[in-house]
Every structure is written in C-alpha cells, then in structure tokens.
Amino acid sequence: MSNSPTSVGSFLFDYLHGKGVTHVFGIPGDFALPTFRWLEQSKLKIITMTHEPSVGFAADGYARVHGLGVALVTYCVGGLNMLNSVACAYAEKSPMLVLSGGPSPSDRRADALLHHKVRTFDTQRRIYEEVTCASAVLTDAETAASEIMRVVDEVILQCRPGYIEIPYDVVDMPIKAPSTPNRPIPTSDPENLAAMMEDATALINSAKQPVIIADIELHRHGLTDLALALAAKFQIPIASTLLSKSIISETHPLFIGVYSGSLSEAAVQKYVEESDCILMLGAFITDVFLGMNTAHLRRKNTILVTTEKARIAHRTYEQIIFREFLEHLGRAAITPRHPGNLPQPAPPPLPLTAAEKTAPLSIANFFRLLGLNVGEQNTIVCDTGDALLGAMQLRTRAPSNFLSDAYYLSMGFAVPAAIGVMAAQPDNKIFVIVGDGAFQMTGTELSTAAKYNMSPIVFILNNDGYGTQRHILDGPFNEIHPWHYTKITELLGYGIARRVTTNGELEAAINEALRANTLALIEVVVPRSDSSAALKRMGEELGKLRDKNKRG
Ligand SMILES: Cc1ncc(C[n+]2csc(CCOP(=O)(O)OP(=O)(O)O)c2C)c(N)n1
Ligand SMILES: [Mg+2]
Image (cartoon, rainbow, N blue to C red):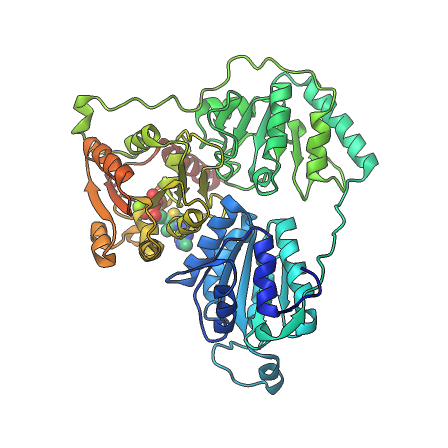
C-alpha cells in the first residue's frame, strides 16, 4: 500500500482490512452515508443494527474475541448515543475504533446551524476525548491517511477506543496512500528491569505459597501464553478474575478458580489470601477485583505488573514493559514448586436425577445444567447481575470463551456483544446469559440476529425484576413490567422460544436449542427470592459493611 492513488474512504477500509478487521457494525445517517458507500465497496462486511448503544457493544464484543472492532455511526445523534458502550470499552480496555460521519470543512467555516450539531462542531469529539486514547477529525485530505494510521495504531497499542470523525465530503477526496511507517517497539529501562527481576525472584523464591492472578490485560495484549508458560515452568497455581474468566483454560491443572474477595468460593479466597506472594499479572485493581472491597490482600505480598504499572510491595519501577517482564521472569532462577492439593474450583456438575426433573428451577441448577452442556465450541456472553455472579462457578471448556463487562457492569451488554462475537466466530454456538431487566434494555437487538441468520441460544434469567439491586436496597424501584419474553420470536418472525419453570423443562429446552439452526430463546423462570451463592455472599458482605459504617 504505497503511493498508489486512492481516496480517504478506500484507504481507511483497506488499512483496517490489513489490520485483520472483517466486519464493521453501524447505523447510517446522512453525515455517514458516503463513508458507508466506501465500506460497502471494501473487503469488509457491514452489520447494521437497530440502536447505537448496541452497535458499540457489538464492536466491543468483536474486539474482545478477535482484536480491533469497528463501529460506524453518524454525527452526534449516533456517536453520542453510543457513548456508554465506548466508555465500557475504555474502562475494560477493549480495542475498538469509532468512525463517525461529520460536517464538511466548509460547513465548519460557515458556522452553519446544521442539524445534529449540539454546541460547537467539536462537541462530539471533545466528549469522546474522555473515552478514547486517540482521536482525529479528518478535515484535511492531505493528512487524513497519516491521521487514520496514527489513531488505529494507538488503539491497537493501548487496547483502548479511538475516534475518527470523517467529514461527508472529505471521505470521497483522492489521496496518495502513504507507505506504512515502522513504529519503534518500546523497551524497558534495563537497570530498572534488572532490579525488578532481582526483587521479584527473591520474593517468589522465599514464598511458601505463590499464586498468579491472571487478569484481563494478559488477554488483551496477547500475553496469556507467556504467563501460562512461566506458571507451568515454576508450577505456580493460577486464579482468574471475573473480568478475565476463561483466559486461562478452566480445565488447566494449575487453575484454582475465579478470585473476587469474599465473592469467590471459600477455598479460592483462602488460597489467594493466604499466599505470601501474589503475582497480579495485568490486573485492574478495581472494587470488583477486590470482591466489592471484601478482599484481604496485603500489599507487601504482591507483585503487580501491567502495561501501565510495575510494583513490588511498596516499591514502584519506572519504564517496565509488561511483555519483557514476563519474558525475563520466565527465564529467572526460580525454584519450581510442588503445589500439592489445590482448591478444586467447580466439581463437574452431576446430571439430574429423576426426582429433580420435576422440581422448580433455581439459579444454581440453571448453571449446573449449563455446565453439563457447555462444550469447546461454545462462547458464553454474560450480562450484569446474577447472570454474571452465578457464572463465576461455571467451568468453561476452552480458553477465552467467556466474556462479560465484569468491571464497568453496564446492563444491556450481552445481547449486542454476542452479535459481534457471532460475526467473529461464525462456527461457534454462542450462549447469551442475561437478566430480565438487562434484556429489557437491549434484548430487541435480537432483530439483528434474525437479519443476519445468526443462531445464538439466549437464556433470560427471569427473577421478576432487578434482583441484584434487591440485595443492596429493596424498594418499588426494583420492579419491572413482566414481558411475555417468548413472544419476541413471533415479533421477529424468526427463531424458537420456550418458557421453562422446572429442571426437566430446561434440560429439554437446551437439547432442542443445541439442535436448532436458528435463534433459540429460553426464558428461565426462577423464584424472586432465589440467587446464586456469590450474590448471596455479596449481599451479606455489603450488609456487614453497612452495619459497620452505621456504627461509625
Ligand atoms: C445501564 C445500567 N443501568 C443501571 C445499572 C444498575 N443495576 C445493576 S444490576 C441492576 C439490576 C439488573 O437486573 P437484571 O438484569 O434483571 O438482573 P438480576 O439482578 O435480576 O440478576 C441494575 C438496575 C447498571 N448496572 N447498568
Ligand atoms: Mg432480574
């Protein structure tokens, strides 16, 4: 791609194609239509959706399993509508690119009162600055190609969203495609890295029970295999977090379970919190990581390394490149461990007994039956609420086949994110787990599954309202209108739907859904008072915290 005549639009989509992008998610509008035309003529496929928040979640879901997701929307009404989804991608480090149509340079000069304009022509870009790592408005065709490359490369490097606004006329302008610059690869400060390796080796070698918490940055930056190799070499057990669940195969012999403070299984919490050397690799130390601040971790026992931070106990090390740290640690003089009896996170689920088949459903049995049916070709996309907390105990079968917005925790993530996952993994059967409340936010995006003949299995956990909120503070505000969820397939004219209230009915519905070559929606009715063990623990811990605060 060098110095050949092209146009801004053609260059943009060729460049994205070269970065491995196969699909773009979007909704058109007049400012974006010319860009849509270039997209349609490119090698990329278009998936048009029903609502911009869903476009953002779809691009994010695609990015989480494929790398670099792209959303194309129109100016302000589209871009600003999508903001929450982009904020989610920013908070959870997902590499997505926002392309927005925009006014032309001559509109800007005339200061016209153009439709969709909010306050100034730059309002949308300025708002996006808070949720992106790089942005550009392509008002000048001469610099458009280098600006596109700068933003896209930064998104890939930082794994955070980027923003490119494309004026509706500039996109058609002819340009010469520049040659792709070679970016220097950043390196660590050698002395700091040597000092850190010495301190890390000493702490690990002196520890009785080292443990690795493998968090999401490993996955985002393609470093999971390096972490896994050093864990295997030195026989150090590994936990994941809610956000990184399944990046390490949950059937790996060194895997001990999902850690999230007191929300974890007791044995996992005990193992991690009794450890005298916790290697937090790529960790976001958020309140969710800390089990809603119920964790008991002592900083003197921790090694924290991310793309942004390197710290051992109370000492920080400047300019340490995460990849180099992992490579060096893998070669360090560390004595391999004999970890002995490790916590067994989730025992293999037992099939239903005859008596259990007619019993009413519970959240625990929903996850048990799911566990019996999840295979290597299934990717699970989870929404916020008990869908997520209950899934903590679910043992997945293949690496990186579980995703959720487990830190930003925006409801409405799962159904549209699954659209992105299905575009990226057409051969996998996708399971969506979503609460009734969250489904009411973006569930109608199943329209897009119908439009593109996708066949997910969507489990709506119907506990008659905002169950999670009820554990924190109950009131009439946690009630929702009870929908006839199974009517949605009728509305769409696509798919099959079942409402199940017993274990046996759920088992039959799952079997039917696995065979169906279409969308299968299963409304799983559970008692209002029921919840997963993790949600019960969260309610108890929050209650204790409230009592403590009341006592002052
Ligand atoms: C977009 C958004 N709005 C509000 C919330 C606050 N919130 C967190 S959980 C929850 C209730 C979720 O209800 P549902 O999807 O039915 O799941 P359940 O808690 O019942 O398992 C709410 C309102 C949120 N996380 N995201
Ligand atoms: Mg609910």
